[in-house]
Length: 213
Figure 1 (spheres, one colour):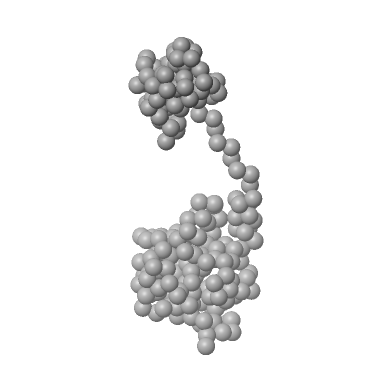
Figure 2 (cartoon, rainbow, N blue to C red):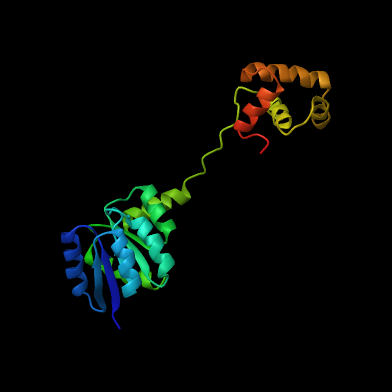
C-alpha cells in the first residue's frame, strides 16, 4: 500500500513541484494539497494521510501551529517540515509542536524520499544543516549562571539571602555563627551597595534578584 502524502505550502509552484516529485517515487502518492495552515489541519483530519509535508510560514495559521493541531487531532499522521527557515527558534518550536522531521527547501529528491519514509516509522529526521545546529545546541557547554549582586561579597550575599527568607538579625547571626553586631554591620554595607534604605527595600531587591525563592 502506498504512503499517502499531504502537501501544505502557500506557493502553488512549490506544491506543483512537490506533487511532481512524489508522483515519480515508488510507493508514495499525493493525498491532497493545502495552501494554508487552516486547510492543512482540515485536510489532515479528512484525508488522514501518512505524512504531511508542511511549510513553516503560511498565511493565517502558520505551519508550526498547524502541526500542533494535526498531531492532536490525527496523531497517526507524521509531519515533516519542509521550509527555507533554519533558525534555532523555528526548528525547536516546530519539533516541540510535534514535527518528526525538518528539511530545508532545496533538499535532494532522494533525501525527501528517505525522510518521508523514515518519519512514518517514527524516526526523527533532520537535514544536514539542521542536524548540525541541533548537535551544537545539545553539546554546547552550559552557560554559567550569573552571580546575583556581584557588588556584594560572598558573606554579604549569604546574609542577604537569609534576610530575604525572613530571618531576623539574631537568627542570621546564629545560622552563620556570627555576632548580631557583625551581621548589623554587614547589613549596613549591603543597604549602601544596593542603594536601599532599610530591610524591606533589601528584601525586595533580593527577591527580584532571585534570592530565597
